[in-house]
Length: 380
Image (cartoon, rainbow, N blue to C red; front, top):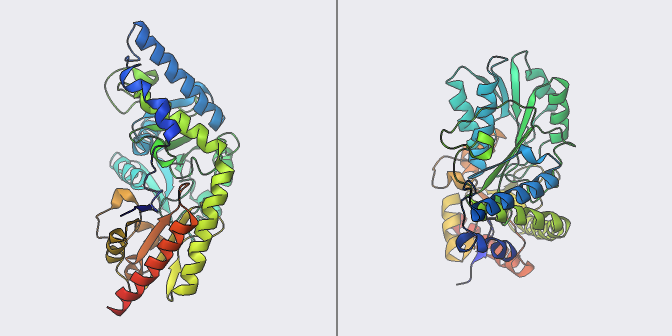
């Protein structure tokens, strides 16, 4: 059975061009970048080259790019590193109720050490109120962390305005851009972003590689003991092949951004339109304008989301009900609950996220099967 993959917010396949770029660094150019002999020094230089490529794409300095193992590690490094380094200046952090668990759980951890966290509630479309954000600032606020685009409902936050507020009050601003990178052109200077997290496997790069951008003027401390890699801020032997793949994937994503966004937006809009036309009692979650091009999150009233996913899987269709990091949990999405979706309805959600390789034929297959399964489950 041919697999029809519609879960690109969870992960993406490594682009063939990316894989080709990575292969030599597994078995030919295998030197440890910390070694003093030539094959180690060569890989150290390669890392610098790809650090420069990523810095150019973000419009930041080379020394502001740090390599990690994933987006979650980048989130931890940034939030904990900045919080603990600046605890003598304040203990207040502002974030939102719909962040990824990597942010929410890190904030809970910091609360155990005396930090106070304000969790802003978004509106029904999943967008925070800028005025409420500004009212939440106190003399002790040291950090604002708001995700660029939501991983479940795809809504894009007013990042430029948040950056301007942070600059106005001289507060550090971090954004979890794991879902946004590869889908949106991000210039950290334009958006006044002081720190940013990303993960390569979300934009057709390898799994197990993350990037943290941290402005050179932001004090932060290491949170992991070990070696002195990454300017003594992140211990561990560098994943050279992964770093090369990340840089290449990001280059390709930037080059094809408009082309692929146009493609997946057309598929997404066709899918949403057909769902509205064919199936009654549905709820589209999130803002349809301020939204990632490939994201469609819909609740199907009267349907168990788990059963819907299982039956789609039997048809070769890969989809999800929310964050891949929360797969297997029985609780409804915290994001849907935060935007006011009733618990029972939230359990009926289906997240479809389109990718480059999806076709109109694939989408028609998806639509026909969702319609058939939803109607059967409702009548069962």
